[in-house]
Image 1: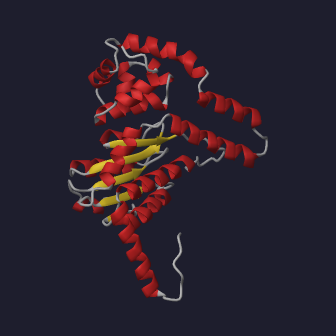
Image 2 (image 1 turned 45 degrees about the horizontal axis):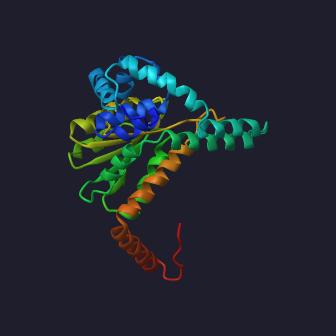
Length: 288
């Protein structure tokens, strides 16, 4: 059995979509979720119990009890980890002023998200978004449509075939008429999860479309239909929650797509600048 830290083994050994789902759930709530049951883990990851056991066997544990024992033993090492040191430092520096306290909470949320990140899950999303033959359609809920619009606007400057799908009252499912196996849907859904988005995702999946989900660590039910899921911890003093981590995830996705499509996106951005000058030749080009 490898002697690599358990956390790293969970992250590095996940390859298939199902394995990444199991690994993501474990890492998001490590080590607490490792101490639940196989059935609970399977439900949280939207996979079967045998899938969980097969993944644990892959990382060196023939019995679930052995995996839990290893997780318990790993707790002591985790207590002295850099992530917890960051938390301790922030707790010591926390101000009573809501402005400073809010900023520190967001900084910690970003650190937690980075520590729990599954690069393979992120790469799976980018792989889908850089396919030039796949139309990309982005949508969100009541409090996340602004995130969907942000991603759609930036992606649309880097590659063709990107559209924002507003969920208009009474017409929420009309766009599904044209959904097909070539489509990639990026869906933002955070608590409280919206039934319309779940129904939309189910319909898109039934049409053969691929789904990328951005959600919180409690995981939207859409995760059951998603090919890849990015979760974000929510640390905020606001009654509406925080989307700072989600915004950072959008920036990372845009950066990755830009790098993967460097030549094509550069030409596309240059053409956009040319068209802008044609529209108003007196306005100098600028980076927005």
